[in-house]
Image (cartoon, rainbow, N blue to C red; front, side, top):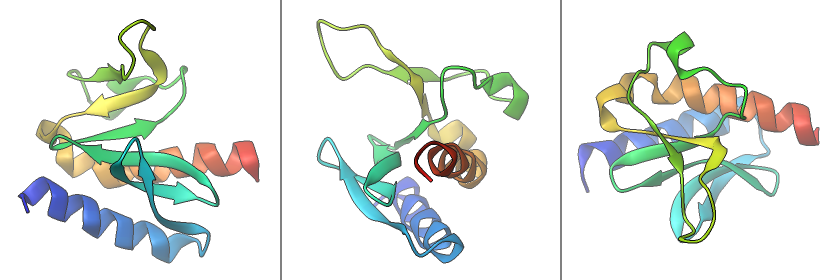
Length: 108
């Protein structure tokens, strides 16, 4: 297990302390974090992917290098899902909390 995956598991544990409806989950066969039945963050290829919404500005968190989730060959990237590399792993917990807050606001 690489250090990024260990950090993801630690973040999953921290997030589950915030709300009893936060649990481990799966997103496209990757380990994720879900609120109720919806995944808001997941770990893939030594990066984390967060559902932060189309209006989120990565620059507000000092993030200048990121990508958008693009799981489909024939469809455009999913602008609401940001893929954040391990360069910013110190921000992953903060981003997970932001993604959770957005999800909680949307589904209650």
